[in-house]
Length: 92
Image (cartoon, rainbow, N blue to C red; front, side, top):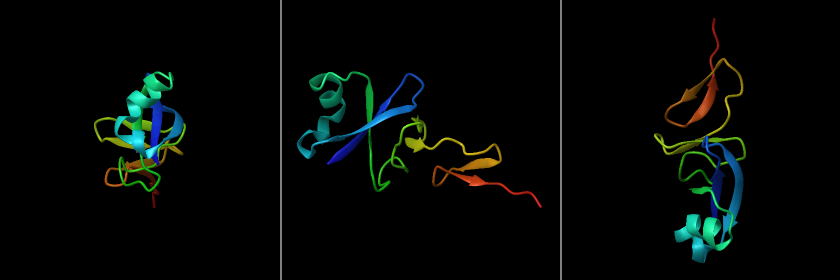
């Protein structure tokens, strides 16, 4: 099975669906055209093997990093560029 995340016009994940293995190579066309769902679909991995993180609703797809990034939990969290995960910054 392959997993694909649907993006809105701001690259925010709005849905994640499973695509059969025999359609994974054409996931965008399969979901948008064959199933009539339209939109933009980007493959994700439940193991984080591609695009750093498994996409979930509310995550942002950053095309420059080719990564799914979770929402920033609090203002004092900064993005770790190596993991694309938020890390809390504490001040002494």
